[in-house]
Amino acid sequence: MAKAASPRRILAIETSCDETAAAIVQEGQQILSSVVYSQIPMHQPYGGVVPEIASRAHVQQVDVVVRLALEEAGLSLRDLSAIAVTQGPGLVGALLVGVSYAKGLAYGLNLPLIAVNHIAGHIAANHLVHPQLKKPYLCLVVSGGHSHLVSVKEDGFHLVGASQDDAAGEAFDKAARVLGLPYPGGPNLDQLARDGDQGRFRLPQPKLSGSFDFSFSGLKTAFINLVHGMQQRGEDLPRADLAASFQTAVVDQLMAKTSLALSQGSWPALTLAGGVSANSLLRKRAQALCEQLGLPLYLPPLGLTGDNAAMIGAAACWQLERQEFAGLGLNAVPGLQLQFRA
Ligand code: KG4
Ligand code: ZN
Image (cartoon, rainbow, N blue to C red):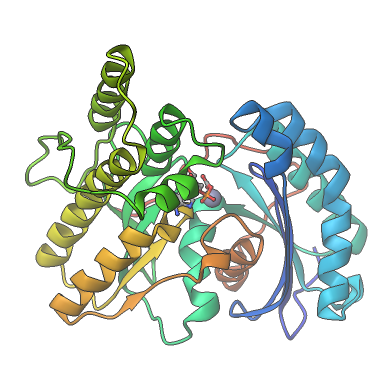
């Protein structure tokens, strides 16, 4: 493989779910361009992501977003130092589109190929906008498939806590669906909750005292039963109050565990990452917690909370520094786990 040139400019590609994205990131911190093609309108009629539709749309769009990313940055393929791509976790067919495209590009240009974990990308996103953010710090990563408390250190990621069942985003999406909200559920539920009474319905919290782990499945089931009970009795659903009560229960738990971890560790900062970090109540509550503790809080701007390729470029830069390259035998790994250090 060819040696990385300077300045280091990584072309990153992200196709793990329902966004086809490409970005060019310079020196791990500067976004030269970031293009996201959202497939939301294609999946909306089905109430969720249809894997085959997602794969087909990625095939159609991946080359388009890469060309746009180059154009937006005013660069050509010759100006790149490496090609990065999301290896997993995600939908296998969707991931394969990005992985195959990236391999072809890396081979054709004789550039290093970097395989990135999507969750590492979400964590790295904050470094694109907060140059003052330095490791170590505690990160609450909350997405559609993951809810983790991660200690981010110079030597890598250390697991502090994780969901024992559903991810926070998954719970939001399910609750939204039960309330009849369109896909994507989380942001729509957030919107609806703004006009609701969050104290109207008390929902159960898991008994995981002392642990940094989360659990959302009991809460989700209790919510479904509550709504179905009302429907069976022919009652009108107080949808905003239900949304606000559910959102509060999820955020209460996320914040309780984050607060517990911060009280027992010695992290100098907190960051939020992942799609659910766009949640307005979560952002507000994290702000209040950090103000109370006198701790800096770093939030991704809303454009970097959801899936994008700039975050993949940021994580890839860490790997470029470690010369951690993939071979052309690289495969997509739908259940790829974040590698934690002991
Ligand atoms: O990180 P992401 O875009 O994709 C994955 O890696 O999974 O996260 C998507 C998840 C979905 O479950 C979506 O409903 C949720 O993030 N989400 C939200 C909000 N915006 C996105 N959940 C609650 N409130 C929001 N404002
Ligand atoms: Zn994501």
